[in-house]
Each structure stands twice: as C-alpha cells, then as structure tokens.
Length: 224
Image (cartoon, rainbow, N blue to C red; front, side):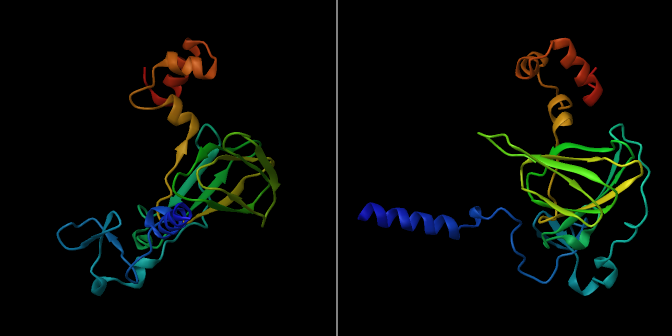
C-alpha cells in the first residue's frame, strides 16, 4: 500500500511541476515588450522588458502580412516569420505565426519540425497537400489535401510538410503556441550542420554512397 501511495504522490508532483508543461511559461504581468537595451529593462523569458510606462499601442501591432512575398527559394516557398524576434510585443505571450507563400506546381515547405510548439495551419489561398509522420514504432504518415479555408494541425515535434498542388500561387498561415517555436529543417540539419557530420556516418545511416553524401553536404551547407 505504501508503494501505491508513493506512486500516486510522484504522479501528482510530476503533473504539478513546471517541467510537465510543454508550452511557454505563463506570464506574471500583463505584457513584456522586448527590447535590446540591457541597461534599462528587466530580463524576462530570454528578453529584456521595455519600461511599461514607455509602451504604446504601436508595440502591439505588426503590419504587412497581406502583401505577397517573392518566392526565390529553390524549394518554391517563402516563409515570413512573426515571432518574438520580429515582433517584440509577443514576448511572454506564448504565440507566434508564419506566413508561407508557395510557388505554383509543387512549391514546397520541406520536411521540418518545430521543437517547442504545435502548429495550427490555415490555407488562405490555393490547394495544398499537407502531411506529418508519427514517431516510433509506427512512423505512420497522415496526409490531407487542403483547400482555401481549411485548417490542419501538426503536433509538436513531428516532421511535416506542405506542397502546392495548384497551378497558381498558394498562401498559408501557421499559428504557434510559443513566442519562439524554433525550427529544424530536416535536410538542412542533417546535411548542412556546422561543422558537418562525418559523411561516412550519414552514408551508413541513409544507405548512400559517401560521395553522394558529400555532394549533399556541399549543396545544403556550403561545406566544400
């Protein structure tokens, strides 16, 4: 019986502990507009806070997301992030978003993951194929064709992607439960790390010729 009581107490402590929560910590004040001036602010959640007496309505607005972005990336997308780095008013509020512009005929937001947040994805224009892969043991792939107005959710930490199926540009908005969700683009992380991973390690992991791996490392990381 003592063992049962100890187990119950441990579970309750774990659920009450801040370590049990995956999202950003809750704020202890109304807002904390981030500033870079370390001599005139209070350090909160990785940023210094602007003096509340100097905060204005302008600190809580970010404009221009209605404007289409040029798409020059080789994979055919342009991501416009709006997290605490671009929008200091988000500091401590546990929210962020991205605008993603997709080129026609296969513009792709390549396989990637966000280590600190789940994502709620809204299609603003176009038709997209979206999908994510579960963790071990299944590695199950979930995919769905999304049209204008559709919403899809990507669980935190899972690899996912979107591809434009249409013949015109597409636009999507991604909403996060973190002011800084982070991003790991699979190909960039694996083949573009700095310093590069030993190509023989990657050759065995991916069952590729080492020369193929070296070429990929040059392409993704400029590690020539």
